[in-house]
Length: 315
Image (tube, rainbow, N blue to C red; front, top):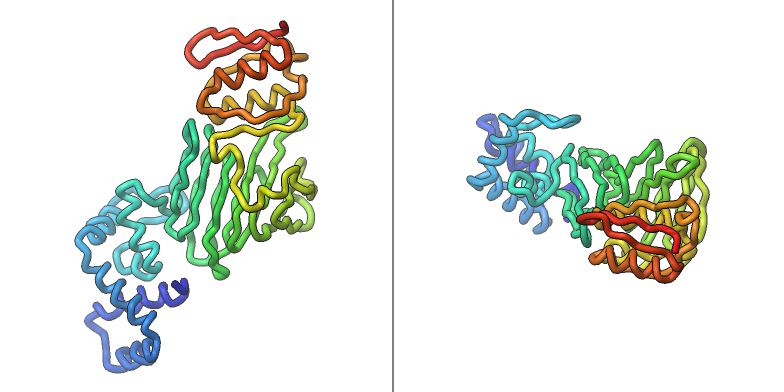
């Protein structure tokens, strides 16, 4: 549906319930509807939605609920003005289906499942990650901690931005991954684009990253580099499917990713163990097997110290 028509249909549906509705306004409505069956259908859907008992109940709960940070509960008429997708979302938000504005979403262990936002976009969050969603009239803003994969529903009137550690990644309609990592030199933000183009803004001029490319942001400086596997532009990140893939990554960074995805705790007995380079593909639904395979490969010893707690030491 056309987002602008959707919002206008919602406003018309709400306005027709006003006692001050006049023949002049009816004429304006008919002019807006003239020859547009899609608009007529949107208007009927909004009018039916306003009569839905479940939506009325949801709207009343929003009015009386304590407002979440950075957004306010709105009455039914204001919700209607926000458009069919957002109004319909109000019902599912309270039932736990879609994320409302200002809602905090947290990642969980295991293979991440897509989370549908009210605008039609989808988010997958890695473990130990979270994102706060704010869907506004003229923008869609998400604040991320950790790692997330975003599939953005096109809407040129509302740019979609992901902010993390002072870096803003903006897209209109695309698929991209954002990862926030802690390194010895400080926080590094990595952006991989799988489809379309995103604009990455650090401390300097914006840098446009195309499908098959990635950006690495350190100290606010954006560096564009090619993906090691550009064919990934037609896929999703391995972690979103339950896999960890590495090409000469340090064991310390591999362990960090495994801890985030699976929830295990791994201690490296010696710093030199963590500097060993690892390549391979590991399933993180069985982290002990993955750790055991890496230990065998490099002649290390893996010791289990408790439930989901391990130590890797030299052989």
